[in-house]
Length: 446
Image (tube, rainbow, N blue to C red; front, side, top):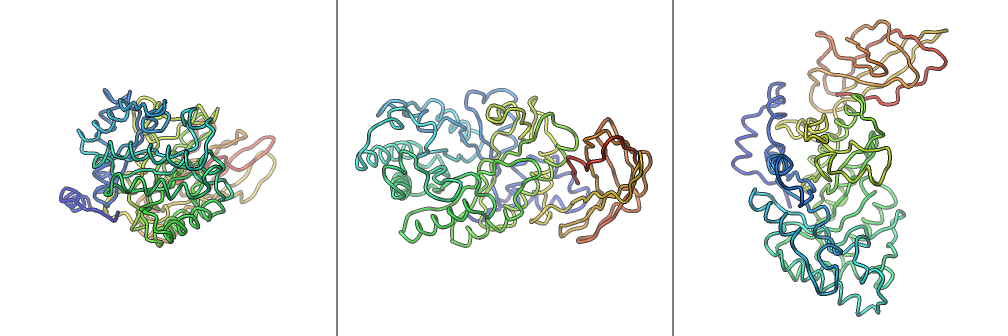
């Protein structure tokens, strides 16, 4: 899938110019309209049973693609061999059609959330291949023409890039991947077919393994249309090679997509952490925009009340663009600002570096350098951080600095708010310390 531009999107792009006022207007526009204007889809995973009230309203208004979080997985739709339950999946597909949304089908063949009769069965290769292809054929055929993208095979690789020894990998070897794709293509020739995995977002051993797998599949004539990168990320750890990684897969002649984006943090959420998260969400969005064959981006649940993170990572959470009360967080603004018409794609445009210039008993002088790493001028900046050891700001220059508890916020003054592409400004401060003076635990710039 290449960039799309509808008439409505073209009008939006013309109306919103890359000025500060234009950016403000873009921040208020529905995310789906901003994404459409940039030629990509912006989706969310949803829980079918929650598609009522404000949850449904937000999902419909802000996103132009939905992914069933669990309702299309094998254990949900075929818990007993040959007996299918489509209620949950149908609810989500019906919802999408009623609101002009695409559907990303997730997922046909996966080692997890399998019914026990598959996972614990005693299989010959021929028998398991038949069971698998029958399941793929049945599910894809039911939604032929209604599901736009399928995650045909999910998480086939180990962390080192080798084939996972799931029931499918152990019994059939790598051939199961090709068989699943061929069955899906036969059932719906028009749907886009993806392989999908986690920890492949940047260049490394696992993504190298995925790259090699995709090359082999293409060489065999397997009908693979795209590669999905889950992007379950940790605050401040967006891979620096994400854009380059997406691009090398696109250069193979396949589409790419960010399929399950969330960015978790150690709780509680603070202003500094949320600012860092905003920058991270913007960076991932820009990475997709920078690669022509990036079809779109899906967040794995748009609200913290519907996130899987707290159940799997105790003490962590706040990973999505909306809070538990469906109020937008800074992360939502980060996505909107990255999608705003005229905003250059590529790396985030603001970084901050903190240094201690001098230190003495009970006090120190610090300096922060704000750098524009983007390709358009910054028209104002804001840096936030948290002190881990009770340091207190006493006075500052070249910025307005305020501190509440451990949280510090610094904003530009009238004369240094504009920073050209590649340029930088600095501000400084005097502060007190007692016991130790470690650097900030979180440093965010936006």
